[in-house]
Amino acid sequence: MSIPTKTPSGETYDQTVNTLATLQDQLVDMGEGFVRALPNMAIALVIILITWIVARIAVRGVSRAIGKTDMRPSLQNLIDTVVKLGIWIIGLMIALIVVMPGMTPASLIAGLGIGAVAIGFAFQDIFENFLAGVLIMLREKMRIGDVIECEGIKGKVEHITLRETHVRKLSGELTIVPNSMIFKNPVEILTDEQVRRHEVVAGVSYDTDLDHAAEVIRKAVEAVEGIEKDKGVDIFATTFNSSSVDFLVRWHAGSTPRDGWESKDKVVRAIKRGLDEAGIEIPFPYITHTFKERVPLGREPGERAAG
Image (cartoon, rainbow, N blue to C red; front, side, top):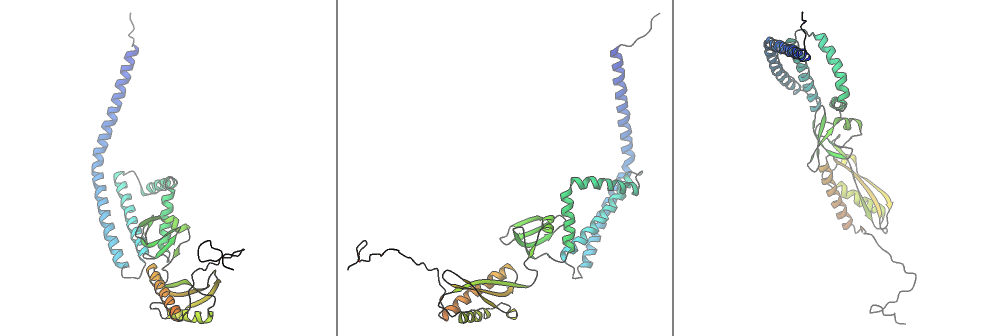
């Protein structure tokens, strides 16, 4: 009597057949599940399309309503973004619940909370700039159109997004600045007011009557067109320089860089004209040579002085 036995090669063959059969069953199940999910996926796509349409209509309505107010452009952008983001979050949650019927809003929110922690660690800088952008848009200072200076970057604010601020340099180049840098560092807003103070230094010779010179400079500056005469003109004698006594001249004019340069050009021209008409010298540096020994003077180079 013989007992049937299986060789090792036969066992391997049976295992391979079982594995292939299992994979085939899994693929068939996945295919059937995909086919069953097609109607739900189609509905989800329709929901996403409706969400896109609703978001556009809502943003237009909000923008039209806000446009009738005096709200700052940066705050308007923030409200538009929040409305659009909220509609999209709701629409995507509904679409996910339709595609995966077993998912509930509670489980979806819980999953989003756990995912938010992981994403927060992975994209820390992005979220930092996002929060900084929200806070920048909420604060009253630094409006779109202001000229600012921050960390060596000086220019006009053209656009503020939730992640970055677009600053157009005075020479024309566009600089994209992360919001976190503007939020963390001191920002000098040059155009926060319509006018600001400008100054220039003017020197007169040491033999000049300083009271008379100060009066001449004051009258010259006050006659310049475009300065704020109500804020007055300051004339201060500040320094005994190497060849002159220096006056610090201060006045108020437009706050934009262009206004500042034009105003300074007019003031410098007016001071020069006024001092010239008054016969007051604006000295250039004098150099005095001192010799320890007697220097021979003659008609020809190297000739000794006569006598």
